[in-house]
Image 1 (cartoon, helix red, strand yellow):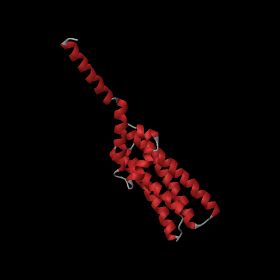
Image 2: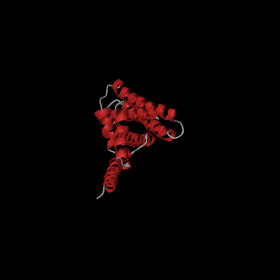
Image 3: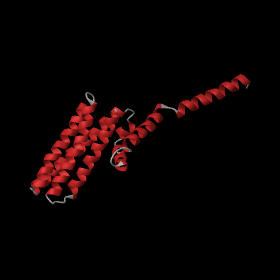
Image 4: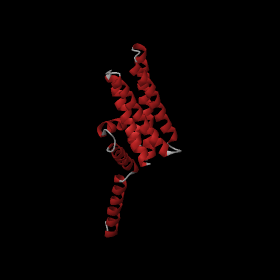
Length: 176
């Protein structure tokens, strides 16, 4: 092998290695992880934020912040809708004022997350505001339980998740 051929082979080898290590698949995965980490570090609970977002394969593959925002809000709507159904079921078995108020407030939580999801492509500032309000509505449910001197851990847990998703959505939309 002459010198020019040797240089060509070495150059081609380095070029192929460069392409391999900088492939879009690898870049997207690492940028998605960084995207999630950058959002979660500013939320009310970094560890649970990471768990929540990384549990959805779409979030792990998201390469744009707006895509991650949509996924997070879809997760928030699903979680809040399930929580509302749970509270309504509990209300049929235990018709107390604090649970009735939580049902009302979770209707608002669901509505705020749905509004934020709709507004994401049209008015990011409104999406950001509605994301924040959802957490405030969950706080109102928790306050209703406290004022009624009622402790219902399953509702308090759901309030905490609503506040977590609110914090996630607020942080993401704040970065858009």
